[in-house]
Image (tube, rainbow, N blue to C red; front, side):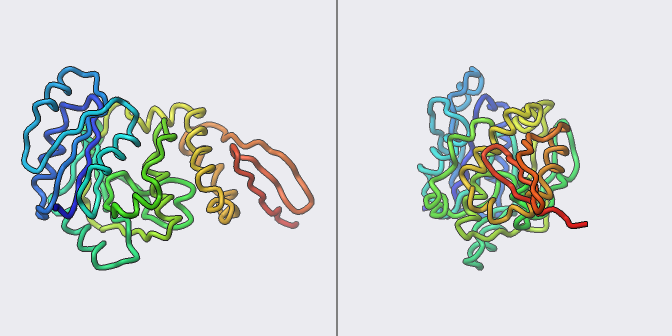
Length: 279
């Protein structure tokens, strides 16, 4: 059985699939399988390509459209590898990414998420300026893109990607699930992932809608309430800045109460109590 399973969900991105698959086949680490999940594509060219797709180490699973989370779950459920690397159909990876990621995860039992530096390509180019993973900072904003290596057994332990994340951020919620379960994170200090930039992407669509962004964060809060409550001092000081930066709008704080010692806020279903500074 292959050691690493690369899972590629595809919805109407047939024009990019070869580029993604070829980047996988060019890996210095060749103990892999590639699973393409056709998530109910409506594009004729995509379906024609995938219905007749023939590449080494590669198979295609066809399913009805249920969204990115369920497409990843379907591919991972069918995977035979010990390790999983998700890859979107329009992105690509550097030739030594899997070799270096496997080396990290196999030599440190405490590490369960391995990612790297990344670059944009397509409509925008340059280094992706993601800050390095740090806890509890990741509770405020995601710092790990979807194409990171993890153990299939950890995916099983947390129940996979949450299908409730219908507007995106399903990878963010998944990383939080692993982290809350005690999984450590390591970033390879080298550009080995390439993130295609379109004029409009799922992330830019999400950021254009405060309602959808708030919905997604409410879901994350509801799945990880204890972890957020345990770090509410950090969150209370940083959340307003995060919403302003991401949406350019006033965050959905509902100022609830002001006491002699605290300010209490509600962010969706999450209550934040911030101790007031004494003058």
